[in-house]
Image (cartoon, rainbow, N blue to C red; front, side, top):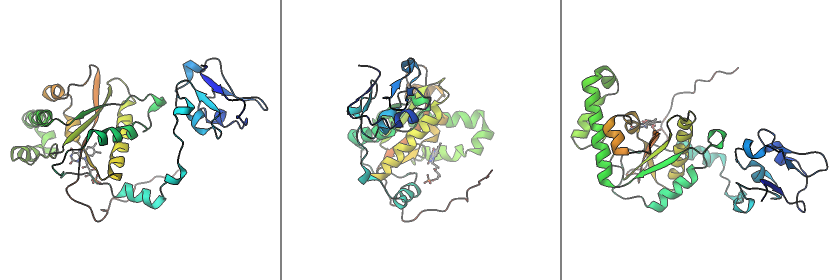
Length: 272
Ligand SMILES: Cc1cc2nc3c(=O)[nH]c(=O)nc-3n(C[C@H](O)[C@H](O)[C@H](O)COP(=O)(O)O)c2cc1C
């Protein structure tokens, strides 16, 4: 098939596909059907906006075939109040039930999270899901070792981050590091991809909000990220060669419910 094909029986020549293309790779002249520029294959980021925005489903793309693009269901649109409550009532969960989260649910969360924005639609985010208790123990021990290393070698930084307190928590079985969560999810990407950190953060944010909508709790695991380059942690995570950990999140069923939304600082806004 051609890179872009337009069904001339249904296309209304509205020009929306041309307007939607971020760098003008679909030409449109009045009274003609839209057509791709000759260099489209090399310049197109395959975001699929041309397919998604066509009101009549007349445009298809080799990488984004129209028949694979699920119709948006307007009836599922949430209200502004529902959206606000979903966002504001999300909490970082630090107490989890002793209950596993099924592979089906984790797959569903990642399926949604892959729709988070990525620069140039590079879709660089990859996923590591750790649910095996022995592997989680190994990571927990490796991060605990990192804490001991920091306390001994960088005492000022360790004091600032209350590492001694966290270490004592670990030694007393409280698991301040992984909160006894049944699942740890790592987003990783090529270490030299400068747009990977925001992409991974966006993906995990999508994941945690999706989790919230189905009663699953999450918490960012800052220490897994902070210690990611410490050799024992690196070994315990074993990411693909040349990849870095750009985000870690604990997942499980929350032990408690939250009945109110805590206050936050007023936003600091500069208007220009
Ligand atoms: C990058 C990042 C790292 C974090 N690391 C941890 C962590 O290691 N342990 C933890 O309990 N919470 C962690 N959090 C959660 C914050 O502590 C939490 O967002 C904050 O206290 C506000 O609570 P809330 O998320 O329930 O609104 C982290 C959050 C972010 C964004």
